[in-house]
Every structure is written in structure tokens, then in C-alpha cells.
Amino acid sequence: MSNARVKTAIGIAAGTAALLSACGEAPPMKGAQLGFRGTGLQQVSNPRLEAALRPDNLIPATPYALDPDTGGERASHAYQNVQVLGDLSTDSFNHLMASITQWVAPPAQGCNYCHNPENMASDAIYTKVVARKMLQMTRNINANWTSHVQQVGVTCYTCHRGNAVPKYVWNEDPDVVRNAGQLRGNSRGIARAGQASVKFASLPYDPFTPYLLGSYPIRVQSKVPDGGPEVPIKATEATYGLMMHMAGSLGVNCDYCHNSRAWSDWSQSRPQRVTAWYGIRMVRNINNVYINKVAYAMPANRKGPLGDPYKVNCNTCHQGVNKPLYGVSMRKEHPQLWGPVTADTSHQMAPGVPAAAVPTPTGAAPKVAAVTAPAKAATAAATPQANGKTASAQGAVPAG
Image 1 (cartoon, rainbow, N blue to C red):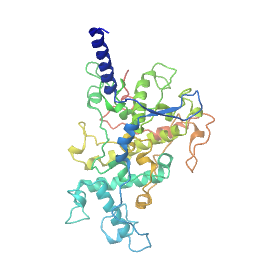
Image 2: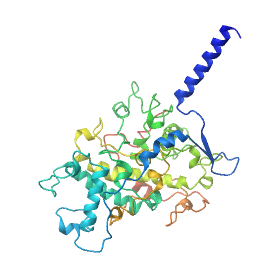
Image 3: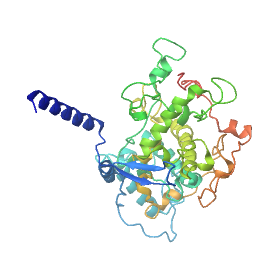
Image 4: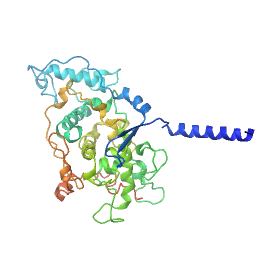
């Protein structure tokens, strides 16, 4: 072989190696068949990425063993200004406070991250006000959103993982809001290179404002180009952006929920699609009913460029695995977070989900037979109002 050909072969090999290394998904990969052969229901994963995720998805040790509650004085009587956890015994209350210190507070501050050491009952430190709201939220999720979290439930650690602010949060996009109604300089959240929110795909990069804060209907298929009673075709790319976020957050393929032979057909989808449907609505509930409602107490350094608080999405809890913390429940060690809670009146149905796909009280999803839409009144009740700062949910969808 001539020197020129050798150099060419070496150049091609080097270029190929560089291309593969840049992709970050070098073989060998791992595949698992989920459904019948020929349906394309197969999950593909990278063993090296899975190994890297494992240390961050393990359950932490408790500060100390908690003895069973055999009665005794309640926290609401022993301490002042206990508004959420007053039903707990003093031992159980103190155990949870020690756990939260490990889960959330910076080690250098400990209890003082939320409490004034001179007056533990004081609400002067904003983190205590926020923590109280988050405790209400956690109990609400464990009581009223079992359609998504099942009996595994959540704790503060599910999101925080030792960080004062969860690692994966989001804010409203200044470009989308600042240039709303303009043509020049108005990206409207449309494709921009290097956006991790949609796994670096060429898709609208803000799927969170319309779908996880607002309640813009999620549809991929439509019969109308724009306007009308259905969701317009222009929303398709924005929907794909949300789906890319969900798949990346869970570390799965699209057919983890969908049947690739009939993407939109609920009767041919996997039960996980129902779980995801409830998860989207649970995240909206968290962002609107809990996080936004406590924004008044947060300082500027805990807010985004538009002054909105950090909000959650699918990755906040899942962090790369299909079940947060591999589906291991912390309820046995921390039963305090499964206590009394006010009924969640915002847990409403919305158009587009098959009535037969609603899980039973045990969490199982029966076989889907037909698609039906609930009454319009329930839909209206489930739609949050625009906050005046961001365009309405519909307006926040990229114009495509």
C-alpha cells in the first residue's frame, strides 16, 4: 500500500474515532425487549452511563433509628409555631428535623439554615417559611398523587439529594417573554443549539412554561393547521421538546410509554404512559400551588432573571433513572411525611386521556377500551390562570 493510501486510511480511522467519542455513546450498548416482536418496543441503554448514575440514586442512611410511636406528647404542644407536623410525637418530629438537615441544609449551617438559634419558633428566616410549604407539598404528593408516585412516595431527599436547591430546576425564559409579540429577535423558544432541556435536539427549548407551568394541551397529531377546537400543528415540535425532556430525565426511549406502531393510541400504549400523564399534572400542581405561592418569601438570588422562583420538572426527581432512587421507598424510615394533609382540590382530569386508563385504587391500569373526554367544566377548573408576567400557556408555545 502506498504511503498516501496509508495516510488516508489513518486519517479516516482517526476521524471516525473522534466522531464516535464526540457522540458520547460509544458501543457496546444494551437492549431489552419490552413487547411483542415486530412492534419495536425495545429499550436501549448505555451501561457506562447507568453506572455513573448509581451513586447519586442511592438511599442515604438515617441520622439514627426511629423508635415506633407509642404515644406521648405531640410536637404541636411541645414546641411553638409547628403548623404542619404538629401531629408527630416529639421524638418523630426531631428525627425528621435531623433528616432534613442532612438532606437539604449546607453542612456549615445545619439547623441554622432554617432556624434562628435564639428563637427556634421564629419565621424570620425565609428558608423556614419555604420549608414549611415544601413539607405541605410532600405530604400532599404522598396522599393525593399516588396515581404517579404509587406507594413509593417522595421525601425531601427525592429532589434535594443533599443540596439546598435541587440540582435540576428551571426558570421562565427571558427571550420568550421579552420579545413576545415581536418578529425581530423573537426566538419564541424555537430551536437553539446546545440546549440540554431538550437533550440538545433541534426543538423548541422551553417546553416547561406551556406544559409544566401552564396547561396547554399536549398533542402530537392534529387535523387542523392552526386555530379551531384542536391543538394546531404548530404545537407538534413543542410537544416533541417536552417528550425529549421526559425521555432524557428517565433515561428511556420513547417506547417506554408509547407503542411505536401507534404512537397516539392509548389502547396500545404501555401502562407507564398513564403514570406519565398524571406526573405532568402533578408537576403543574407543584409549580403553581406550592412553589409559586411561596415566591414572596424568596430573595432575588433564589429566583431567575424574570423574578420567578426555581421550579421543578421531571428531571428534578428522576435524575436519569426511570424510577427516582430506583423505586426504593423511604417510607419505612421516614413515615412522618405520610401524615395528614388537606385534600388536593386541584387534582382534576383534563381532555385527552382515556377514562378506562385511569388507574384503579391499587395503582394498576386496566386495559384501555375507548377514548373519552371529561366535561368542559372540569377542564376549566384544571387550567391555571396566566400570571400576567408570562404569556398565557397557549401564547407560550413556540409559533413554529
